[in-house]
Length: 87
Image (cartoon, rainbow, N blue to C red; front, top):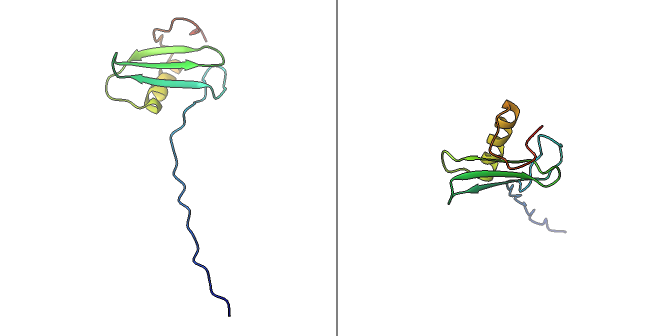
């Protein structure tokens, strides 16, 4: 008679993404940073060189910085980018 083996349950831990979708070119190449020292949120696309920065109002994670950037991008606000902001 055979014994039953105990099933091993694998717990998959989900992590936050490191790269995000660019609202301008649609590629998954946007990096977002929260610069706590200078109180700035910085977003840069590696493909189309879209850039934006804005002052942080509170402590934000990169996901929060990216979502704020996308909201302001679609609203048509300028975010202090050096180059590549024109949509």
